[in-house]
Image (cartoon, rainbow over all chains, first blue to last red; front, top):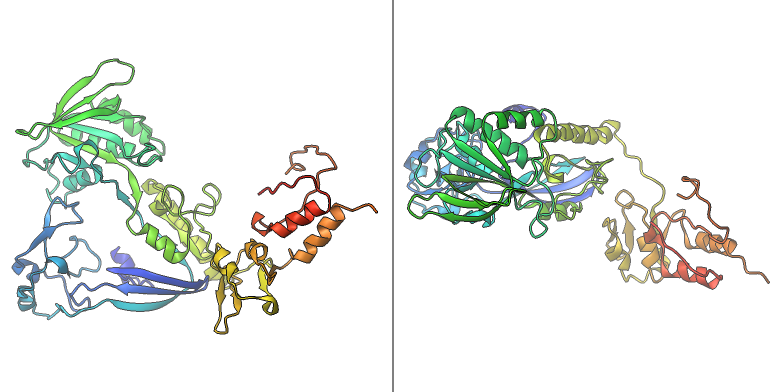
Length: 444
Length: 44
């Protein structure tokens, strides 16, 4: 990330949002809203003097709300750029931070800043978020956490400095249960498989048992999906290390109000017995969802979403990077959850896909395009409504203009126009008239 | 498609090529019926 920030050809706009995308490949006009941090990016050196005097604590989003940060603080220690920000909603405006800052880098008067960029190609890599509903007591029972929260607990730079402790009392859990497929593979929630959670349960359980061999770990699964390079072998090593993988889903979970332990019940498939187990902590391998804001960015870019909510590629097998808009490409989990190795491969693919038209300096389009006939147009604008690629617009005089780059030659406008005022080159009405007349000759 | 899989189909079946089924409007279908077609299938 630091290398990317320092590269002379890369400009990083953090704390910003894309609000509008217009135009076409080679000539996109992108509007970006830069949100106010209330800290001047060019002045802040990340010294932290302000954080020390700030009296307000807010939940730390980066640590999955397992720790607190000050109202004025840096998002996380390795943030790029190393600039602080203020959570204005929680700020009491005591201005202790302003007094403490020698560089006068704090500016409470900052507003949204809108910038316009001229862009040739776009790669969307907006990632994923974890499913957080009330399944298995999540949100109700303190010691039921998600895999992402476990990752933060185990991280050496996390809120617990890498020590395995559980939320309720900060003690090390000696009995842990992982529940896989939470919110995934469920027609009532998300029908799809979230791909990475089985391997995540193998990794995290193996990490814990390597560090603390006296831990009893059980993983409840529907199937163990450990495809990909070396994952099946990893799964075997996890079983050999003593982690118990049980095929069966948890039916009931209750909390012991005194100890905050969880009492779970599950039926291992094919055994006809219900196992009741008391554990210190439950880790949910929750579903992967398209990240917050995916719906909005899809609408802004005029790209489609698949039925599962992830961004839609041209073809899931043969063209997983291109979108229906020429010049906009997808990379990573936004197109569908995938492991790290596949994300990196797809990112490289997206970069080269974007590089091809940019290197060529030109973009070749087909000739099959819509052509308006102004004299016939009644200006009902049915064609504009019907066009799935938003390729038709109105100019200052109110006449129809077709953007030949966005137009894909589908012909819906030609079919729907009640005045026959727009036709599809090479597939005109006169051609079809002659075609059909010849195919179905009327004998006199 | 039928040609690619070497399937046989009767000569009473006439094909009209379209760039996309979106191009097929009511007027084209009606002309087909008007010229004596017994049925029209829009495939795509």
